[in-house]
Amino acid sequence: MENELTVTEEQKIIADLLPRPFGRAGKIWVAALSVVCLLGVFAYYRQLRYGLQVTAMRDYVSWGLYISNFVFFVAISLVGSLITAILRIANVTWSTPLTRIAEMIAIAAIMFAAMIIVIDMGRPERLLNVFAHGRIQSPIIWDVVVITTYFFVSLLLLYLPLLPDIQILRAHQVAAVKPFQKLYKFMGAFWKKTPEQHRISSKAISILCITIIPVAFCIHTVTSWLFATTFRPGWDSTNFGAYFISGAFLAGSGAVVVAMFVVRKAYQLDKYITDVHFDKMGRILVLLALLYLYFNVNEYLVPAFKMKEGEGAHLNQLFRGDWALKFWTTILVSMVIPIVMLVFKKGRKPLPMFIAGLMVVAGAWFKRYIIVVPSMLHPFLPMHDVPASYKYYFPSWEEWAIAGGSLAGALLVITLLVRIFPVIPIRETIDEMKTD
Image (cartoon, rainbow, N blue to C red; front, side, top):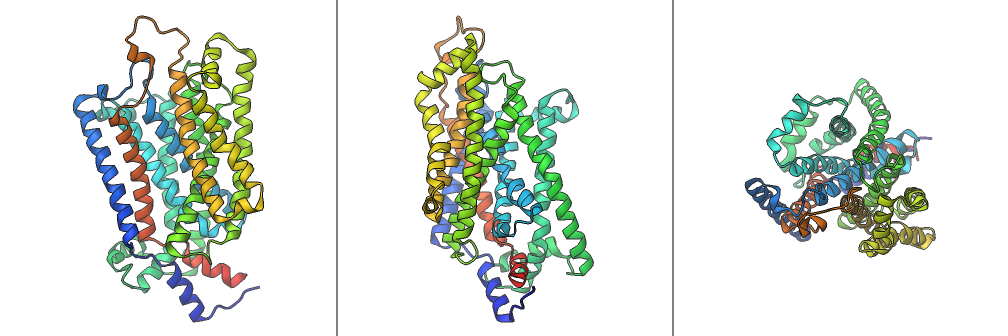
């Protein structure tokens, strides 16, 4: 049954959801992120000038912090397909206030995932060789194809639902949106709100939602194959595809929970992002954490049972050696503690959910670091007659600065997108309130 909203009620929703200018805290946030980004740019300049010798990477640990960051960004980016595509196709209407922020996170993450790969190259000018001389037999080419495809599909999934809102932004030229009117005009000049345009747009969004799901699964499966096809202890696994995908959905959902809390607090959107949304996302987070915990048990239990020599040395380091504290802390922080918190209704309130989301995201980053570095420090052939620095790895300040700059850059992109566009879909919100 359709309810009629009065003009006043509709205008109130629009006023609540229009983008807003940065306050003092917002300006400090943007300035801080910009400083971290500039420090990362300076560190990358040093890397370009002096080569990869400024990093702590050597013959054995040749991926290190950069590839850990890459896998983390790819994981976070999968949230777009979970919130926007899977829940939309399942006709889960409560997820509407979360779809746009999920797509913003996905686009920012996939942008910097691609960028960190270029940074990891000692000769970035040779990137064109990947396209000019790439071999389809190589998993690296598969990764390039699916990342590019996923980025453009995510961009369209952000853009198409924005079109009705862009018309609203052009019609309400308040001070907050006036600086971006030329951008809005460029993006939505062709949108006339005709029934035919709405029909085509709705059909296109449905097609994109269906398309992005297999692409999203491919992007992290192919990323896992980059590891699984490399002959290293800890990576020789047929479980890696499912292991990576389940972890990616968990990390992405944790990122959305953090963004929900921050956006709700910053823009006073309690009426639109309610406790019910946190409760439902908490249930999803518990399910995903349990699923990822299962794949972690599966990933480590089978090789631990066999204890082949190379795998045994690697697992001993993780379970009770130099990496044990990091490993068990990461398992507890990213999975066990959030599960215990969120199975209780009180734990699914906004503040506990925010804390659990932070734990999941931080744990996800450290988990990727633990997947990458210890395996490279334990090759099947023992290290002989090499300098001591080859046997250990701790990132140089340039690596930390570049990694921090990439994380700050992703947050800056999300912040600017939230400033320019409505973080909650306006037209969809109005339409849903009419049908409630």
